[in-house]
Length: 106
Image (cartoon, rainbow, N blue to C red; front, side, top):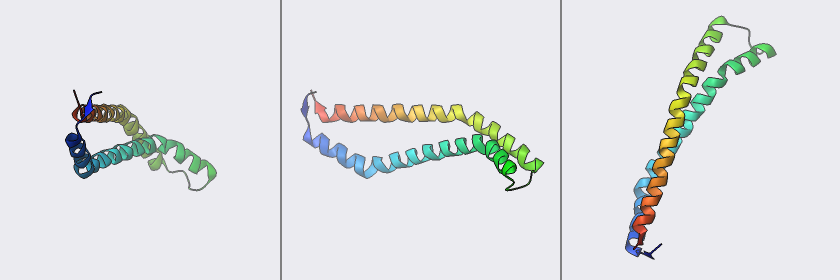
């Protein structure tokens, strides 16, 4: 680590607080909502079976078929979700490294 460039430090802090924090919060919220949808799609048949077994609602073949279709969609979304999460993790890591290189001068 070299010396700290204070002008770059204040610039990075200002940029991150004003512009980047809103984008980062939005992206993290979208990733969280994507994973919430995937988990709920995968758990939908299990929840339907439990609800039918407990007698909370009566068995309906249409709900069962749609629940199985939603399960397939959820399983198909898992690789995309993992890829998006890894990509964003890599992007944020590289962004932090870029900020460190900007702040510390040689």
